[in-house]
Image (cartoon, rainbow, N blue to C red; front, side, top):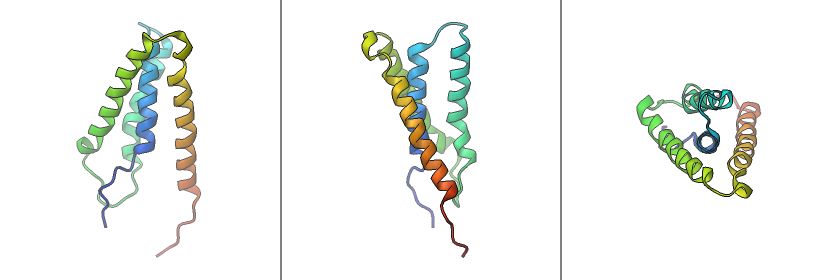
Length: 117
């Protein structure tokens, strides 16, 4: 039985805040920019390799919503770049919060008891 729901929402939200922070804090030839870019690419593609359901969707079909999340995140990051300094830390704050929640979801999925059929 195949479900047509989007199964990578938690990592997509993480990707959104990661790209928002990347766009907000990007510098030319900065080491932090390089590391954030590599991390964003890994978060963009790696969850596809971890899908455990029958009937894995095509990679392009699976990637489109994630690219949309990343694109909107970049747009939000550019907006936060011109925002006052008092709210400039919000993308990183929400990135940390979403990473903690996503980690909890994935660790719970690994540790929950699965009965043998």
